[in-house]
Length: 331
Image 1 (tube, rainbow, N blue to C red):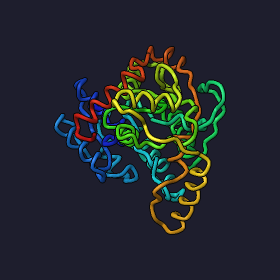
Image 2 (cartoon, helix red, strand yellow):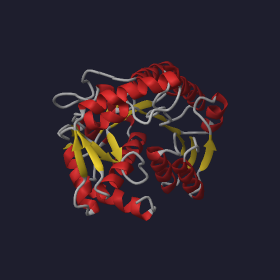
Image 3 (cartoon, rainbow, N blue to C red):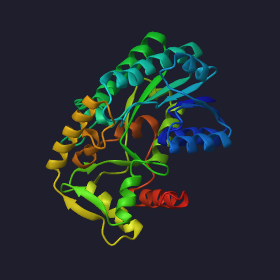
Image 4 (cartoon, rainbow, N blue to C red):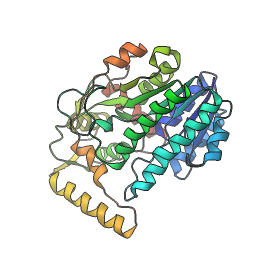
């Protein structure tokens, strides 16, 4: 196996590249090294023997270079949480970059092209239980470009006989995750603001379970052409997640509860003003989705197609994540 992981200096991508090396694969990582955590991940993977190519998925020559000789491609490079960026910014990375990678991969005749999508394409507030065939409701430019990129992967796979699979991970967490680090830090200090009631459902999935699903895809020929939801053993409410982190950190209290509606309005105003001024907003709509989301997911198709089962429950996952944060000096 020669594995290419785009976005491999990021949270999930670095774990995939790390597992590839553990399995004895030659691993090439294409990713950015602009942020401290990306540099740290690049250094870790280099020490493990991976080849790290620093750059953007929008660079066609880099895509061709990174893809050379690849037997498997995990495509995770994405514009995701950047606030105040134009639609063209997201389209260039999430669509044009994906197209360039597909073209490069098809020349190599790869055995598996795995595209990492998102459960966000179903919307952030979905009644009942969401399945693969549930209605799509992308709510922002990131999610709309992910829907379009999924379609692009399917069309390209059919036209070029490329064995492609789409995975849609739920809320991924675990060691090296920077997104939940703020929650853990805030709770440990008793200063985490919980906006709203915290009653919305969220479906967490530990990063090791996501990694195992990606590699299962490489082993199962019947996975080709599928689009699969990857989520944890069961949902929890945001309040339950916060309380689990509170228990794990030993904090006496997580913080204060505040009304959600004013923050939703403020985030919208700040994002629009920042866009007009061409600056990065300190708060924006998608950041508030964390408090506003309410979804639960059915993973029976992934179980059936991949023979995959999530192994890490919320309590154990939170414990492992906290241990890593402390070991790394992040808390």
